[in-house]
Amino acid sequence: MEPLHPPARKPTRRIFRSLAVVLAAALAVASGAAPAAAHWNGTGQDIARIAVEPYSYNDTWQKPMNKALSNWNATSSPAHLYKSSLSGSTITVKSYSNTFYGRYTRCGGSCLYIKLNTRTINRDASNHANFVTSVLVHEFGHALNLAHNSSTSIMSNSRNRNSMTKPQAHDVSDVNAYY
Ligand SMILES: [Zn+2]
Image 1 (cartoon, rainbow, N blue to C red):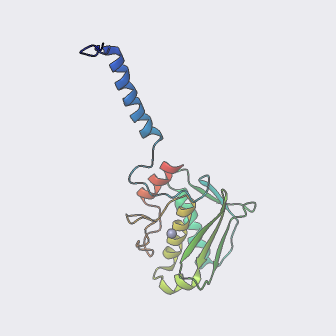
Image 2: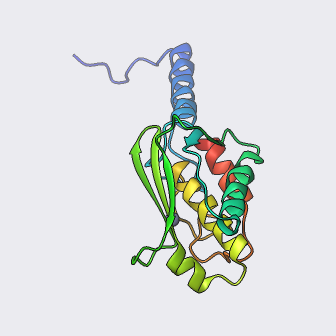
Image 3: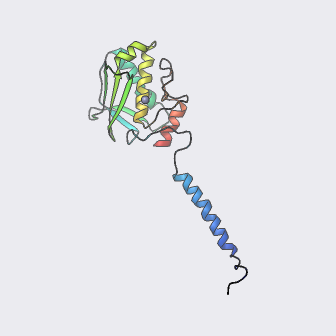
């Protein structure tokens, strides 16, 4: 015979159960997915310390390219870009028939190839130095796993490349969240 009313649960048990629910929710947040505002794709380099082979171009290119490295290095993030002849990662500046300004390719967890297109950059830049820096900072953003987005970001394809030369607050916080 069944009792008319199920025996009341012990209050302690109920408390443990609700604690477990709270803990599970906290763990889900701690280990969980990217914050809603983050923009990364995980297709970049394994660590934020990124070496590239030393490159040598004329000053019109060399200086703004160097600035792209130092602009990332100046951020409050683990991003650190430096030159090392042991790297195997290369930045190549030449005229490509493709429509891109710059292109990042991952060749391994610590290997990358970046191409800068003299044809399109020379054609479209009004401030050449800024434009070159902006494109290379953007490509390094891909190396740091950042994806395109449409906010105030070096990763926005509608940014003004003639004036935006630095990683923006959004980009820095994304890198900090990723690494
Ligand atoms: Zn891009």
